[in-house]
Image (cartoon, rainbow, N blue to C red):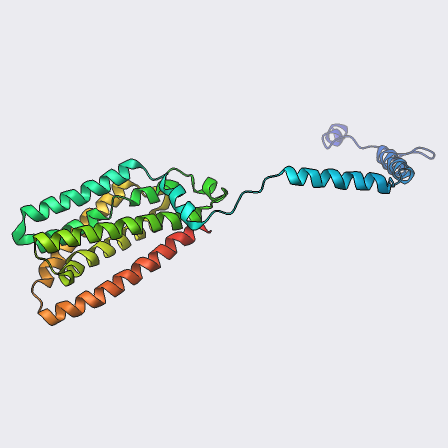
Length: 274
């Protein structure tokens, strides 16, 4: 019985006799011998001495290869502008033109409520080009663009510059049409269109910054509907104010909305530099 319980704990190895070495000792000795052999091999190898003629030949070959490499020329900001404009989808430009034409048609058809219509149409006039801005995040291309010749930050700056010029042209066109056909003054144009337009752009940029990959054209359209309803209530409220308050609101609102736009543009561009 005791013999059986002794074997249940495993076999006990006897210590090595005199003159014998264990397996661990033999392995340690082999490792030392291998290290000594490698050390002798390394000591036998000498650093090759390069002769001056061979050095001159190598340097000449390096210079010839450097001359063959064509460095990319520096691209001006104007060329960057037109290069990036080529990548804007034609559908975005068509949608922008359609929004402007539709707004003009609505204003002409509703002469009695032109101010409210201007305010409610402003968010949708500015929404057309923003889906182009979120393509890099929506299609998970921002990491690839970050490693290209023009990194993501430069691409975003160029896109904002393109969109800014397009928006400026839109405001001028609508201002001329509203002033000549509907007799809307420039103060009213600023108050009922420019301020809601810029605040709507701020709302779109906040959505892009918070949504990133989840942001899409449908989400921006939903935000535009909400902002259009808020702009309609804003227009109805402004019509109840006195003339001097309206003038002060137009001046302060244009400055604040422009500052907010610049601030959000800087925040969006900062995403591209991270």
